Image (cartoon, rainbow over the protein chains, first blue to last red):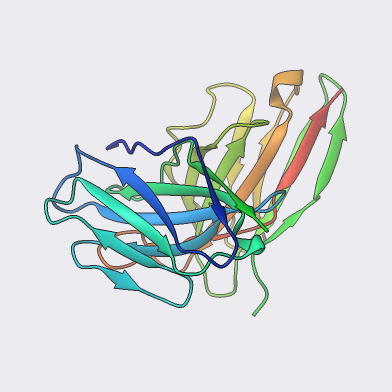
Length: 108
Length: 117
């Protein structure tokens, strides 16, 4: 499975935008880029996914580099409830392989 | 539409006992995944099942662990002769179709937390 690299932790302030980076230099042409998040003591929750074009939904935006070797999850206006571990995952085969993720802390 | 239901939420076993964890996927979902999360670590894929079939068990330990997803009833993750190292949160996820192409959303349960004394 292709690997992703994310910072271990990031910190932001409430009501400010947050940009969570992910590097995936070994991505193949058919790998989808997925983002999930895990709030404390809960199961992971789907955030967004995309292939080549940028994607938007009610939770976040996903910006994918033109060469697809990196992507950025954008939370437009962070709230305290967005504090979680965010996982960037490449899905090639019929399963999702989670990495260590980025632990996002939101300051009030 | 109820979400993915896992039970028990918490389970305590002594070394050598058996642990059975159950997962009821969302209605209409025939694909089930089990993941294990050790304390302060990420999720590790264990097994992927469709109704009555094991599709990918590449993440399952070779001994003591088994999984099934019968035609009727929940999926079961069974751990025989538990050891302290089996203490972890076990998450089940379901999907209505095979992951791939434009799909990819897994719906996760709240997890079952196993403690081995």
